[in-house]
Image (cartoon, rainbow, N blue to C red; front, side, top):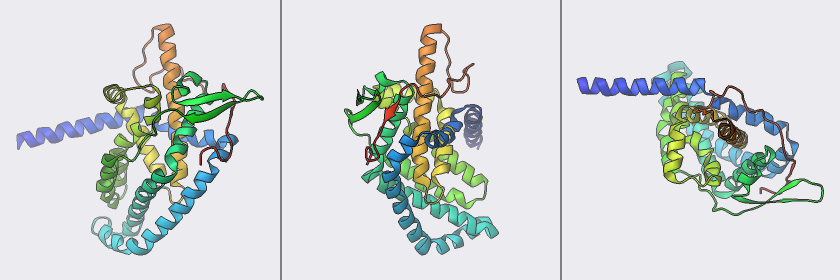
Length: 297
C-alpha cells in the first residue's frame, strides 16, 4: 500500500511539475501565432488553398458520417459520467474521433508534403536559408524572390502508431466535463508537440538520441505546444486548417531556437528553456519567398 501511495504521489508531482513548466513556457502561444502569421502572408494561404479544400471536403464527409451513425450511442455512454452534459461531451468525442480518422486519411494522401513545404517556407522567410537547404533546393528568380524547389530528404512519416493509439485510448476522458478534456489535451500534447518539429529535427540531422535529449530538456514547452495544437485540431470541419497553422507556429518556434542558439554562440549566454530568454526574437520577414498556388498539392 505504501509503495502504491508513493508511486501515485510521484506521478501527481511529475504531472504538476510538467503542467507548471507548460504554463510558464511561451510555447503554447506558437500555434496561435501561426494563425496570425498565415493571415498576414497571402502567399502562404493561397498556396495551401488546394490542400485545405481537400481537407475540408474530407472532414465534412467523415464528421457527418460519424454523427449519423455513432452520436446517439455515445450520448448514452457519456450520460453515465456527465449526466445532463452528455450531449455536449458526446459531441466532443465524435469530433475527436473524426479528427483521428481525417488526420490518418489526409496524412496518407496529401497533407504530409504540404506541412514540410510550408514549414520550410516559413523558415526561409525568417532568414534560415542555410538550414532549409539541408533538406530542399532553394533558388532565386529574376525578381529576387527565393523559390522553394523539391525536397532532397526522405519523406517524413507522421503517422505514429503510438500517437494514434494514445489518442484513441484517451478519447473517453472527454466524457468527463472540463477536467477530462484538459487531461485529454495534456496527455496527447506530450506526444503531439515534438511531432510538429519532426521536420526541424530532420533539417538539423539529429539522431534519435539527440532528438530525445532535446525534447526532454523542453518537455513542458512541447507539451504546451502540443496541447494547444490538439485543441485547435478538434474544431469541427476546419481542424486540419489549424494543423497547417500549428505547423507554421512550429516553424516560427524553430526560427527562435535558431536565433537563440546563434545569440548564445556569440555572447556565451545560455538559455535552457522556452520563455527564459531576456529578449524575444521578433518575427519579421528577412527573405521574400514565392510560392505558387499549386506548389504544395
